[in-house]
Length: 156
Length: 396
Image 1 (tube, rainbow over the protein chains, first blue to last red):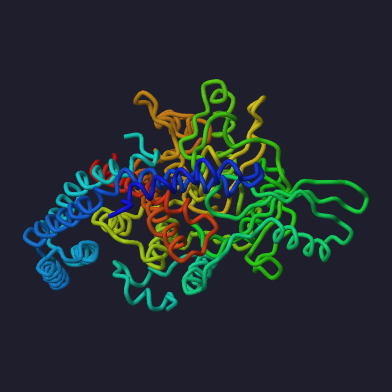
Image 2: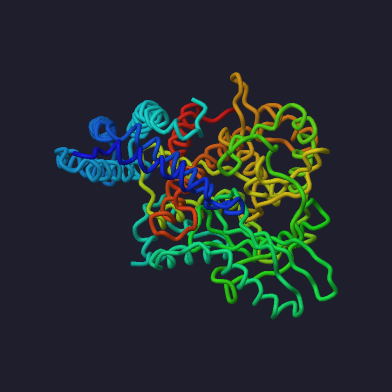
């Protein structure tokens, strides 16, 4: 690819930083703020863009992992059983061909399971669901926080 | 396709179907408006000449002879379109005002008239900007708008650098000493407002049962999440269910006027004297459990963490804030209730960043899409907060 993505983003950053931003009038505060934010966004995108496919693949793998565990360890009555069946279907349908879509469907199935367990899950099922989700999300949210740390909100 | 509350009710799994629609009437209207607006075309930020013309034609009608000048945008903030301007009356007297106008969709969905009513009620009680004019339905301005007098002061120390939306503002030792008592005492005064003796028009009191204060707020935020089609994740689902299953009681004496977004960044202060000159951003105010404000104040995102020491709004350590609040207010902070509102605060912040802001940006309904996607990256912090809070369980 010529020019490559890095070269293209770098040129946009330089244009915004060195040509457009200095020529904005001092009273154009909104435009100045947004130009700074655009530059910040692009700098982070530039640093991360090559790692995005692997990050999203890992997100899907993590979702599949907790979904599989939930489906084997969460028990209950009608609603819970139906939700477990739906999780198994979402997991079975995942072949990596649509990483974002598959992850979204798996997470939605987990969401439905959490509500179903509250309705008619066994006491053990409720406990297992909470424990597995907290374990999974302790690790997952930390990965997400590290990924987004360059935006400056996180005191990691 | 627009989403209505009826279709949402059919798709949202609920624990207690009969009470999931229980909320203040104004919040039902706000949610219905949010859902209806989803299908509207993109919104464009007003240009200065357009804002000037809008203001000039408005004052031709409401204040004949007055002249508008010096219209300029206000920097910072993440929700409203805001413009400073001067208004010179026919007798030559001049006053600076602030126009605060809704974009088509924002990171928070609120009501300008409700905020206006509260500013009028708070005038002379706690420092607030004087409310001047209101266009509640956008009959003149393109969107609902309010105009208030400008108050002197800053939201952060000069030279403190760029901080998005005032998050994590560092005040420093000198200002901290000057501001902290005022910050706490003003919050206590807000909570002491006698809303029964001096009712606030449109502000309903959640007193039909002791769970209603918690129910109203969780119902509102949960539905907002579904309207904006936030992308779920397991910890969010768990938190949502936990909040539905663990609503605390709110005895009558715990009902209070709550500010809703009380933190450094949402008040003005005089940099020399350290005097707080105005409390801002009352749009999320409601009558509810006073613990709801405490949970919000104590959110880590709104404070500073320096050398491992957390300060809420860079003013108080967590325990220090709670014990001082109790000592000065005479109230008792119920730790289990506070824990609930700690969880609710992170849940609300998650919704604001992951659903409301991103939905507004995706729909191109806001003048700061790039800021909203920037703020959206904070979502992971709130997911982490929820893990921490739900892992620790409820304090005794």
